[in-house]
Length: 166
Image 1 (cartoon, one colour):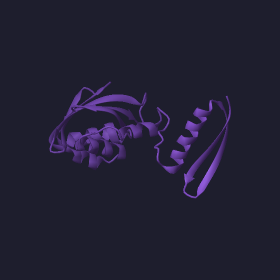
Image 2 (cartoon, one colour):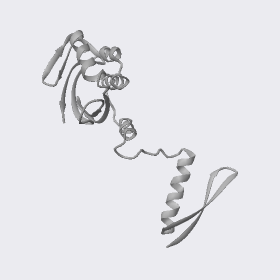
Image 3 (cartoon, helix red, strand yellow):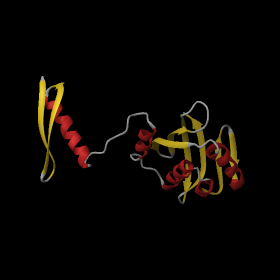
Image 4 (cartoon, one colour):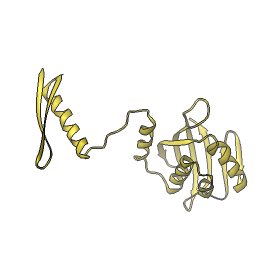
């Protein structure tokens, strides 16, 4: 083990000599410097620390969702009651907290009371078939909490959704 001297070419015509004083094998130091060079050149996407809000947002980039579910999450996270109501089809139903809301007026009531007022932010963690598992955070005690959303979808609109804690 010893000091590793590394030469890295960041851009054509410009060179940067990096001298590390890492107490590790030189190959590890070289890997660190190469990774750093890639990050500085924008060739590597860095990931946020696990468990942070930024990390949860990044996870969504890797989950493929149906358009209606994407719209549901986007409108929820934007706290846009009208956009959220537009995600639901005529005659849609919502089952949440042991109660069922049916029709536009009741669903708007549910949207306001359960998503908009507590400023819910959903971060999807998985989607399979018609079931979305997402972390919900907002202005409520005990959060964030995980929920399973089972969607019925027709013509890019939600026909029904059942929500249960996971």
